[in-house]
Image (cartoon, rainbow, N blue to C red; front, side, top):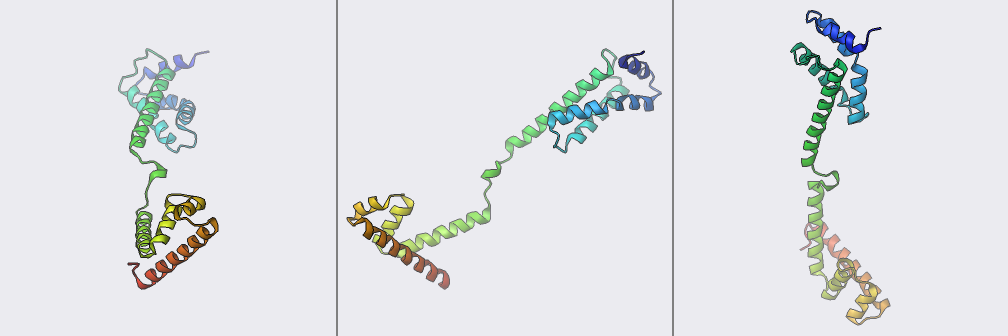
Length: 185
């Protein structure tokens, strides 16, 4: 019985039989498919394009005389498949190096809204009593505990909680009235 390589070489010596050449090369399609899918991922939809490019490259190479018969056709196809896979991976990694991280994307609308809210809060804090503004700043921006704030202002722990609640209510009132009037200033 004749080996696959000997069978392939017998047909490749006849350039008039292009249809037979294509038929022989298509026999390697399952191996090409499996290698491409395994290398770039079974769920990657680009595998068909890469595998198709491999077939086209093999046909062009054989028709153009680049396949000299130094190796079997299977080895030649394997080499072309490997090179196409490497080219694909390099191309994709080049693209991904310059792509921003998905988590780092900033939505311009969210950023604008956050800036407006910060400005409203800043203006409202300026309209509060200085003691209220200082206590809220220490609590929310400096992350000081109620006990630390009480020590700073010389108040009891309980009284500090009451003053913070009054400051929050006052701040909400200023923001609501400012938004209703169209300006917090």
